[in-house]
Image (tube, helix red, strand yellow):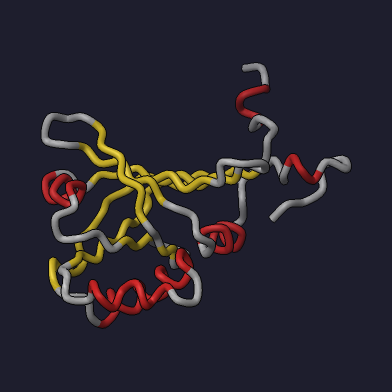
Length: 164
């Protein structure tokens, strides 16, 4: 992902990422932080495992997860996926969340995504984590971004340094 910046690769590319770079970045164990709006109109943030398919972000929350209740009344979300060490890679998105499945015992697409996530976040034995929890209901939530912003690097984006 990093292109050399005057011999300072530690600074990152200092630009937005291509769709392929975003896909590669989100294919790693990057935790998504989903912001929803609670019934009092206050923001609520939850860290979750994610899977990006190039067009949508998928998450698999537990049946009693608070943020799913928020989605039922207001599907608007913001999501932050970030590498919080140099070169500070970030993908930010806003859009609508759709409950595609559940709450139910995982099967089909939901179980396939869950197995891939477990492997990505916990390593080769990740799917073993799922086995004792397979009878616990979950949702499958799809977040289709209306806007997506990405950046890699420690330098400020031009919009912050150019005079208006």
